Image 1 (cartoon, helix red, strand yellow):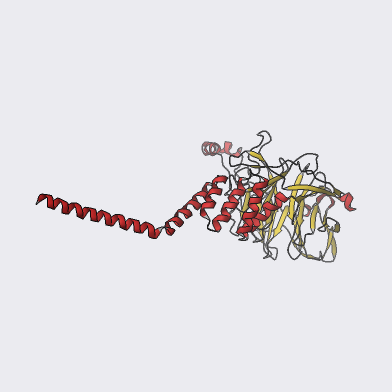
Image 2 (tube, rainbow, N blue to C red):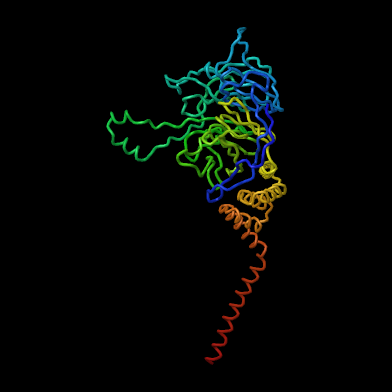
Length: 459
């Protein structure tokens, strides 16, 4: 375990309303690097997944060593799971690529090389094995290679299997395959579509098939919704999937949650390969293209960005998985076989707490925190939206209008303006009606006066 005093000049930025990268204070700074050697165990060998349990134990899918390594919340070695007993026989893992732990400390291992998911209880005794299912929904060429796994409070298991384009595979509490959920939409180029319509059968057979894209990772929030990443390179590379399989992710920010907005065209857009969901709708996605971690709030506003590729502290070679707990953020590097631990700064902690306070209905604290944030970073337009929303909930519409104008949030500005106008009308209703009746009365009186004056002149 290597502990480093992190400097405050780490690269950090956000995006403005105009989709321009603007400097920002660091939200998280690296504090240490963890590897197998310093833990007193074998070096991590091509690890592929990391998961923090509700008790803050850290589980690492050490793929190349065919095991799952467990650390405690202070990043010390605790245990290793490399085998289990199945009907009296000792069995081992083969290239496990995913791990998930329930609130009851049951461990689910995506035992990729053995084409199965292994469910162990809190004592690491076997509960069940989910093998390749048989179903009419599966083709004859289907191969079950689970890479990621997640389990909701009802005991339903969701599995990301390599080469499956129909969505996540859902299994019942007993381990039976029930359905696919959350399949990506097929992206069809209009020119290719027209060409296919008029092509011969031989030409069509040589064309690329239009198939949905494959998911890269998944995580569950506190309400059981699936958050997922995929490599679609469209506006829905992050999804929030409900029980019906619908994408209900809010995309109300200045731009959709897709990672980098402004980037080198030669390097290409962000490729989001993992996602970690915190509480109150906060979620983070890992970009393998530039090694960045992007964190968004429940409405889809970008909160902060950190990380990167390189050789410095806080940079990575091949980042593959992320997770977080309390004020810590963990990034797993597959090639280097190490975990970089980040700790939130005052700036990052303030943003997290402001979002949580607003979602919990504590408008006073949310407003105060957002005001502190604007003092630390005047360029964070999202903070002015946060102040405006807090004021909106307190029915302080005129002040909310000002802050929405500062953040260029047109939708909330219009909402606040409409509410302010209605409030003004309600408060001045009696006066306005009195004026209206007075005007009507004066008009009628003036009309009667004119008629009488006209009769007198005629007579």
